[in-house]
Image 1 (cartoon, rainbow, N blue to C red):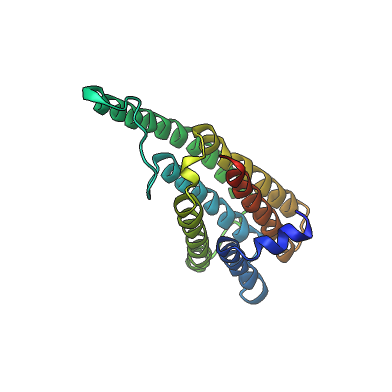
Image 2: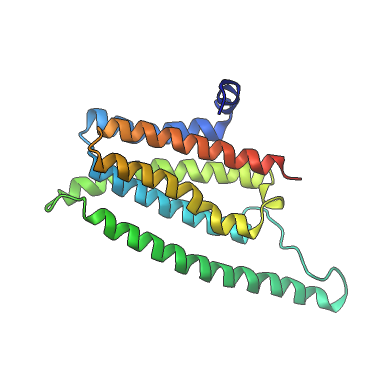
Length: 210
């Protein structure tokens, strides 16, 4: 992104909330001792959040109309039923292959966790970080997908493959940073930059569609 794009992005409410949610792990690292292993788990959980909101978008929750295949007569209900069936099949397919992706990713992360973590403290820290991410993705869904009617411009292929493009780049960078023993604060800042760029580019593509 160029400087003008950054200035424009910083005026968008969803971008401001995204930056605030990414500031939560930054505060955790600087003041509460969050380490790289906790960040790996937290960002893995964020991938699950992205997957859930992708399913919501697929179903058009929040105002997306189900477009019938037939516009009039007694066949209209058949068109509406067909839309529901297609969405149901897409949901099952997406949940299956995204679930496998998340499971494999989780077992990979487990290799980096300490042998005896403090699970009580870990759950609290993950809960705090995850809450901020759910709020960020939820408000972005409301403001962009629903209010700006992105549901009328997005295709099924975008929703099925979109999460992977965003998640893969971020997670690869984070894991490489972990393996290179980069400081946790660098991981958070790097992830924030990648997250911001992915968010802005995604919604810019949506706005360009007619």
